[in-house]
Image (cartoon, rainbow, N blue to C red; front, side, top):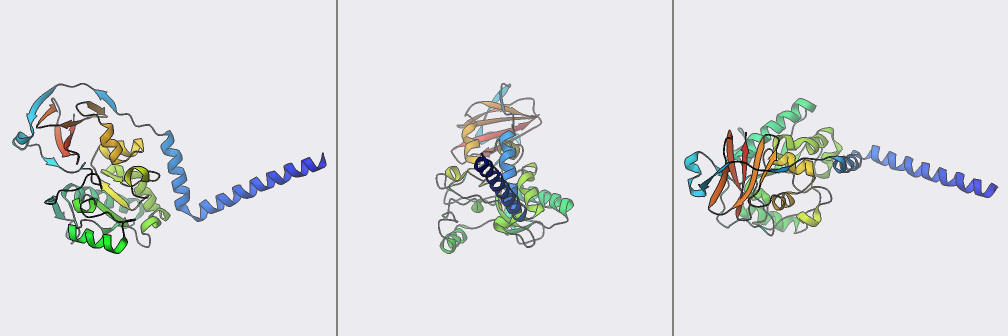
Length: 285
């Protein structure tokens, strides 16, 4: 009986020691605590994206510009299965008065994200890499190797839609060791960005978790992707071609062909290439 009690007491002590060690490790490594908390949080988070019906009109893709509707690439999927065409020319501008080059929509959203970070933490948000030419991507591939760098034509950096970010003293995985970096990873979707290569999704993206690599997809898509804890690949595949979806005051549709069915009675409409031969329509009521 005494031996049994001793064994039980020893087991309790071991459990307490292991728990204490795990807690100490999480305290010492904020990124581990953050990753654990985010995993638990996303399991319980539910984003609602419902199919809906709406009145539409058929408009030829070639006539969209006449309607004042631009076609951009903000939702374009770029990876080894969906390569950029050789003659691809992104819509680029210089970010503010710097030599940092970004896609036009991305630059505006990045300015808002940077301002948010500054107001919240009095911390600067810095870019280590944004737009790369085909030749520059080839050089990165040669320097870093295929385990961490994409081949030319398969890198989002060639679109100007992606940015590798850092904070003063925190780069790479280290961005999760600072409050501003953790905030960015949890809230960048409010400014139209996603963590393009999220935790536990390498089997889908082919890329390990990169909390420093953000990708602009715009609103409300960033909130939906983040809220569902999915990748851009999964999101585009989830939106069935020809159907309409409702999210808050947005109407979304994934379509293909030379004629698009556009929702009526909405304030704004934008259209993006999906990188797979189709289009994603975003309308706001």
